[in-house]
Length: 113
Length: 300
Image 1 (cartoon, rainbow over the protein chains, first blue to last red):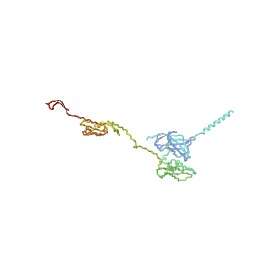
Image 2 (image 1 turned 135 degrees about the vertical axis):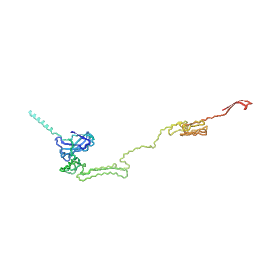
Image 3 (image 1 turned 135 degrees about the horizontal axis):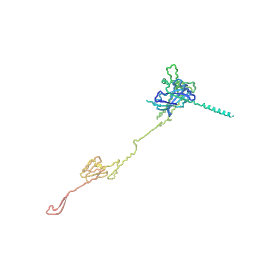
Image 4 (image 1 turned 120 degrees about the vertical axis):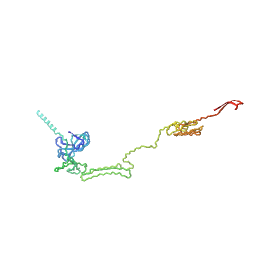
């Protein structure tokens, strides 16, 4: 998975994830009520989760297409420069959970001011 | 017969290959893209939208769970579009719908040593249930325990005493003065000399303080520490010396010595006397010489 670059103190940083099945390649339908997609964000080589983002539907029918957007909002404010990891987890209506194995890599640099 | 055996073997090998192709993983994959995806207007809307309950059935004893997924609001200027507000809301309390979440239980003990005082643990648990839930069991367990099972006078409940004592003055403390006293009595007579405080005598200082003794009779005094000394002067002349910063010397023929505790001076009186007269040496008597005897006369 590619490494995504972020700048500290940014308030308009977003990423979009398309969830599919490994065997069929089909998108995971997230439109049913009860679905939730989370992005947990933590520093690399750390076990403490800094914050958790809830997936949003940027466009209509994105959820049905397995597309979910994550808005960092103000969570990058004051974030130290360095390597970070992200984990995407889907919670289904029956409260079961499934996590994407691949860790999303982030590199944060400090802004100039 | 040999060809038949070869055909059977090939068929078995072909079937194994089919089995290997059916294994596959259904794990979740995520393809990530970075950019701006959310509509800018949508970000101004508060995502705390109303949650609708999707409860198909209500069974006795079943906990209704509100799970609503909140989605971004579409622009409001599109009046023809039906807003599908799906808000994500989850109720923390599992035991009721509309139940007040905050159950505050407080227990406080205030221990006071006082006759008849009863320790009270005030514990309050408040529930506000607007709806009636079948099969709902209110279980608010509030425990309040007193640290004291019985009341005892003088009992310290939670005492973490810290006592520190520091003696400013230790009573009955033996004060030991490491003082040395050295007396050098010139004449050791009966009385033991003991100085409570260490003192060193510098006998020579007192002698030279103040006036210079001038004795007409050439008297030289030297005082000693002698309390029992009886000073008997054969010649009525002496000095009175006191232990003082100033030495008073009174010279007089009629003065008498008064012994005091003085350092270093030993009174010793020495007197010199002289006689005068004339010595006549008579040799022979002569009739015609007056006074008769002839001789020599010497004066001394």
